Amino acid sequence: MADLAMRMPEMEPDRLILMEAGAAVLGVAFLIKVGMWPLCFWLPTAYSAASAPVAGMFAILSKVGIYVILRLTMLLFREGPSAGFGGEVLLFGGMATLVFGTIGVLASQALGRLAGYSVLVSSGTLLMVLGINDGVVSSGALLYLVSSTLTISAFFMLIELVERGQDAGANVLAVTMEAYGDGEEADVENGDGATMPGAKAILGICFAACGILLAGLPPLSGFISKFAMLSAMMGVGSMGATPDPAVWALIVLVILSGLAALISMTRVGIRTFWGSIEGAVPRVLVVELFPVMLLLSLTLVLTIQAGPAMTYLDNTIRSLSTPSAYVDAVRDASAVKAPIPAFESEGGDAP
Image (tube, rainbow, N blue to C red; front, side, top):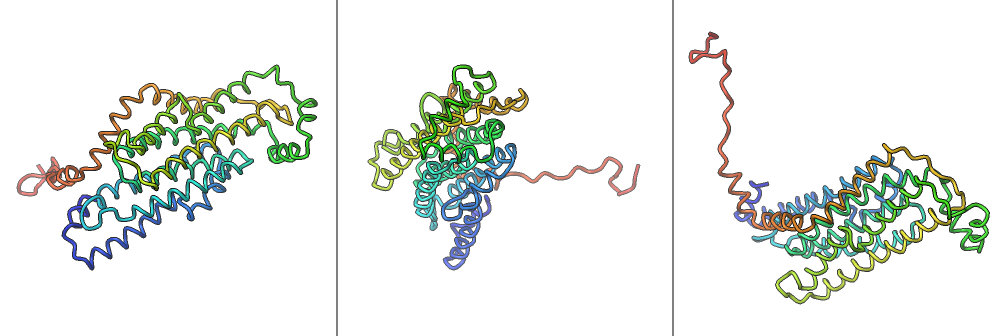
């Protein structure tokens, strides 16, 4: 990567075109992994079909594409003849991804698909920030990347525990009964919300925490990260610059996506924990709930230590914005020579 950064300013125009074409092909590969629209149709179905631990890992791996795009953009396409290469694609592609993910969140009836579309919402938000290419906004985006990854991973593992006491078509059946006016009768026959078992209460608390984090409501880290991004977009943190119409559209989309997540999580939460048509209590072991509580505890730590975390991320973006330091460190590094084995002498004979 450092070698590419050193060679690009000296490339001839014909070679530079080939370099940009190769970078575009590589970018498409990672955009498929990120799930940018229209390359994202595989993601919700694949993630919802995976087992809970695998889906939690997928939520982390989807951000690998974001990291690679951020790294290459800052290193190769921030300055020089190819400055800003692919920025508009990331901006408008991220906006389309965010819109598609928001619609999917609102339309999802199954929890697994809701979590899958939440991955698209987070990916679209981060792609838009990469398209803006503003350092102050990017530091808040890195905090959002960490917070959303922890939240969605916990949500995927929580879904398996929540759905353990339900049939496969319980959510669809509940929607059908509501549409035909039978929801109240089902509640009277099967549910008694006054006595809630301990396992279900803990699952409900974890579910509410995931909903607050996905919607970006205070006081958790989801709100802090979105507030950092939006304040920088509106000019508070970016040297008082007035946002252009594209940035205003981005701000509106981020707010609407949080509102959609709040509506969807509230609807599913009420149907699952308060108005269940089955009334079955899932059997949950402590060892199964521990990873979910651990990930949510990490978001709480990120909330309490938001100041030091933002300082660290600001320094990270500042370091990425000055690639010359990285290039010089790699170029000036001395080669490490292999040690001479102890059994060899100067003449090559064993002692």
